[in-house]
Image 1 (cartoon, rainbow, N blue to C red):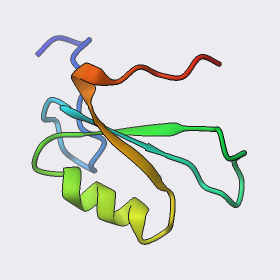
Image 2 (cartoon, rainbow, N blue to C red):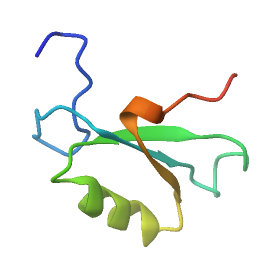
Image 3 (cartoon, rainbow, N blue to C red):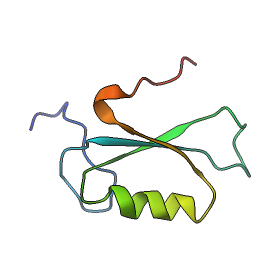
Image 4 (cartoon, one colour):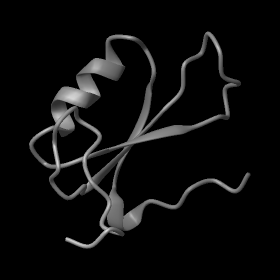
Length: 71
């Protein structure tokens, strides 16, 4: 992996990311704002559940298909 290879956002994980988890915290972000976490195949479900139980998960998209919204 190069320095440019996106890696998973799970604590301690250094695996290549293959998923983008788009989220926002409705208590502090406007509804259209999207923050992102990256996930490897192993951590996708765990990170999705973490955000989901907090009502923050908005979308899960394959990294290859992700296009960040224009700011």
